[in-house]
Length: 182
Image (cartoon, rainbow, N blue to C red):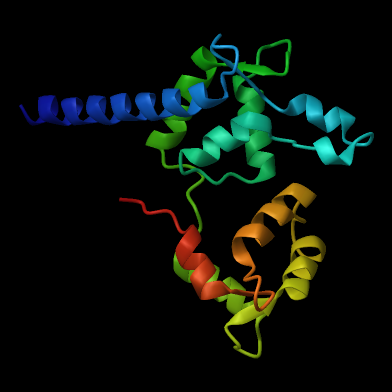
């Protein structure tokens, strides 16, 4: 009896995941043919037109909209896992659904917890001012660790920087970006 209830609960969770995945996928299924752009072609043209560089394409946006935060490398591995044997640059929903369901069930690629994000910002702010200037943030984003792409940097700056002070109050920014796991 308990096994039946547990199985029903699991089936309900899976059904909810399937709906979320399908809804997110459909936003980018512009041709209504159960495919989305993997973005992998963009890597090959990066040297010719930096403005169109988007190494993860729509699949990355879909995965992140589902509350997952894989690194660029992890995202590339996921794309390889769901691509056709002969890569076409498109991902079919039928291949994406089981892989993404497994990712969600296993709670892979979870966002970094709020307290760890705060400690990371505090390391970058040794004076304990509670903020970083736009210039400091750009320096860290481009020169330290895994550098942000131009697009990632612009997206973060537009969301994080207070235009009046030209700085980021990182406690406020963290509160805004933390995903509610409830």
